[in-house]
Amino acid sequence: MDHIQALSTRVKSLTESATLEMTRKSRELRDQGIDVITLSIGEPDFDTPMVVKEAAIQAIHNNFTHYPPVQGIPELRKAIAEKLLRDNNLHYKPSQIIVSNGAKQSIMNAFFSLINDGEEVIIPAPYWVSYPEMVKLAGGKPVVISTSVDQDFKISANQLEKAITPLTKAFIFSSPCNPSGSVYTKEELRALAAVFEKHPQVYIISDEIYEYIRFGGPHESIAQFAEIFERVIVINGLSKGYAMTGWRVGYMAANLWIADACNTIQGQYTSGSCTISQAAALEAVNADPVTSPELNDMVRQFKQRRSLLFENLSQIEGIIPNMPDGAFYMFPDVSFFFGKSNGKYDIRNSRDLCLYLLSEAHVALVSGDAFGCDCCIRFSYATSPSLINEATNRIKQALSKLQ
Image 1 (tube, one colour):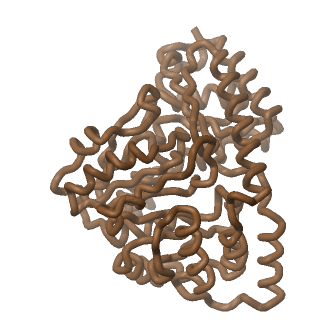
Image 2: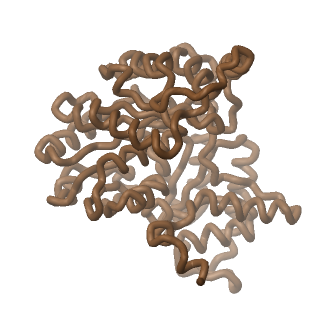
Image 3: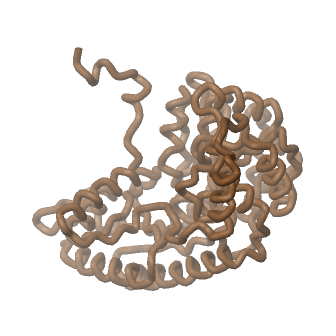
């Protein structure tokens, strides 16, 4: 039997993560001895705080190495509930918290618990690359709402209203957003909540993984609006704000019956998150972000890099950068270069442009089509200012060769 035919329809409907694909291509060039600057990875270039690492080491010495509860250790779920009250003024009981192997699993748990075959999930674009694929994996149908740099990549209440149908079951978005770095204000969220209030069949999945990486006012969660609170599923984790990507700890906070359903689902395919990682997460979650020297230093450096990248990109003819209010990404419009060529490479779309820049400038970026916005490409500025300068110089030179 042909190997492809033997695969399930489910897996054949999925596509490889564009960020992972670009990482793989970059490694292949590095293996050839080529100096590649990577601006494609969504990972802070900072180390996990020492106090967090020490908590994990102590957990090992204390033999905290046996099966944990599926939904997470009680101490961590209690700490997360306290964090949600402390930082977000959201009232959840520990029983409403499910700790998972990364925020990605928390999102997948939510989809598996809510989505039936053929039901629709509304996704504003640009979106994180995995959202549509995760919806499809759960048997749902992604419904995309397009935005542009002119809108700061944020949907309006009117766009949301028009996208809702009798088949709509859920809505998912991130704020701060990956890939644009855009942040919804309280008033913008209030307008969206007013629409959801009229459609009680729609559940709202709020991905707040970049909560602590903001450059403006306080973080605003759509869960703050009482009229829709029972239908909001808050997703968060330790990867971004605490520089703990490899520890794989995420969590959700939701209505108890949703949390119970996710506990059942998780119990059948991974069980609980690593005990050592949870011990480290407990230390991190208990730390007040306002007084955390590591977090404040990381945000300060990201803000400086944001300004540097914006200034550098603004000086390249044909690139229209956005000024993000959070996360560590910039998502400039590059459609000016579509239809151009250097004689060897023909640029028809954002993927062509990224492959050209990887080959000619040796800079790894991620094409906007992966995020539902083909006119843009994503820059991650989770790297040093010197590499940002070198990368943008290389890009400027490579783009100047396109006619």
